[in-house]
Image 1 (cartoon, one colour):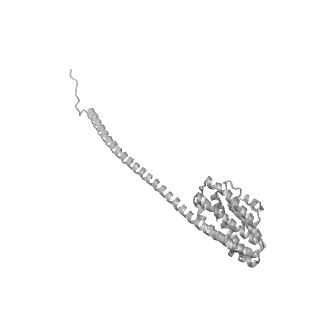
Image 2 (cartoon, rainbow, N blue to C red):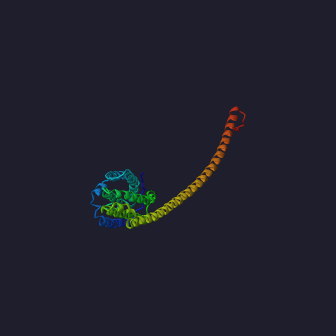
Image 3 (cartoon, rainbow, N blue to C red):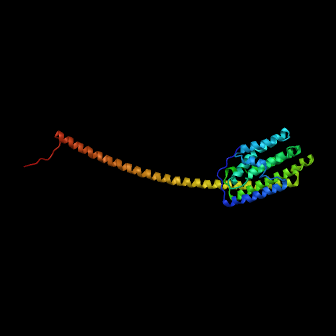
Length: 289
């Protein structure tokens, strides 16, 4: 599954807000997990990735390193493909080139990789991850519409908040799994208040943003319809003018035809006079001395 995002509307004011927001999100992630995403080895590798497929390849290597069952492997792989593509496209709506030290999507991809590494030797944690990732994917799918609609500043701000929330969920899960909880505890990871509250916030945010995106699509569609109608009206005016010109040309053609007929009649009469003169049938005046 792949996405191609059209040219999005970005403003200098909105772009300038992204950096401090993500700086704070990265600091909060580090506070929770004791891991710095900016200096993590995965971050450097992801910075070199320039497409969803290259990011997928890197993260799938982390999945392959897990001590897992086939079901867990399938669950993680099914989640990675659509989510990486969608996050990459959403990040593009914010603008990879707005001057961010570390783009929002790549921060999340690094967080996913760190979480997979933390779950490497914890089977119960891996099972919980599949559930968490499935829910994140479900919420993010509501935002697919952003890949085909220009994004205004308000929508861009909400996308930023959503990505920060996803990073927070990854931080909570990484912290819990990294602390080596018991198998029974980890199996209930998704139902714990902190991470459940974060998932509920993400649910609410994506619902609101989905409605906002739909409204934006309707607005754009209405604008396009009005422009098309305007063009059609102008075409109709041109058609009417062309029809008027055609009518005038037809009148001129009729007049030219009438003139042609008259000229032909004169020519016929001249020819007749000449013929009469040659045969002596005509009477010509003579000079008298």
